[in-house]
Image 1 (cartoon, rainbow, N blue to C red):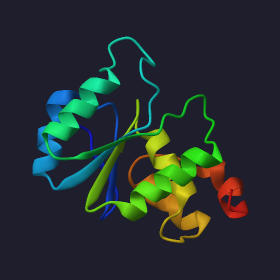
Image 2 (cartoon, one colour):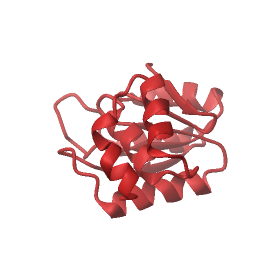
Image 3 (cartoon, rainbow, N blue to C red):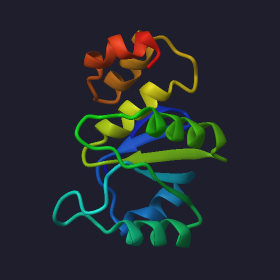
Image 4 (cartoon, rainbow, N blue to C red):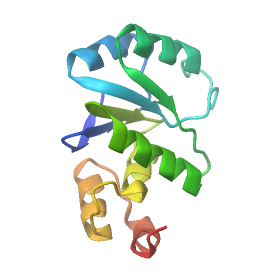
Length: 139
């Protein structure tokens, strides 16, 4: 697993597998967020398998699919609500982790500046500098 820490309550990762979820629970994660559309590419675990694995491990499971580089306000708001309401650490995943990191930066649950959010994502290996204008506009 390639888990990358964004802050003390959020990590992001590329595609998880059902067999990874018990390890996430053992590492103290309380919630798992999938940011991929179900069946986005061949070989991707079915959403139901990921949901079942999360529930079996005692993790809350959420699905906020985004695709095509589009981050609708409803998806950003839903991600922010999960972050604010989580009862522990959250792990969000997509194909590479970039969509998950982007949703977090756009949701801005900690009220950080655009530069601070870009720096946090960069430290985790994600370049979100192209979103600076959107972040500064608060969108």
